[in-house]
Length: 198
Image (cartoon, rainbow, N blue to C red; front, side, top):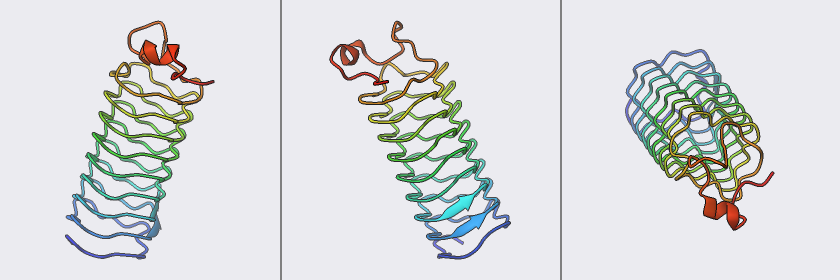
């Protein structure tokens, strides 16, 4: 199914596990409870699609386009999402536990209550993201961009790389971040008004 075009197809309840969907186009699809476990969807496009409570566990979605889409309650555990773009998508309640989101774009996403525990977010862009109650426990955040993000009650306990992440103009009071330790927003940002606003 590589390079297949499946626009506007209803895949609700389908099992597409281990499928090869590289470069496939799945735009403007509205489906729920679809299983894509361990499917290879490198460079696939899911723009403006809706996959509610679907399972992408272990899927390969490197450089995939997942923009302006809805993945509410879906699972991306241990998925390979390096360089993927979720810009302006809905990920509320989604599970991305252990996912590799290196250099992924999550700008403008709404991911309230999403679980990014143990995920790799090195160099990921979460600018302007809504992350209330999101979980980043044990995640890797080196050089991640959280500028202007809403992080009320987000849990950063045990996250590594906080000292290099950018939280300029981020708002809300997160958990697991202490301004008295080295693993937090660089002090020069706090002293010059660039730290968290509450």
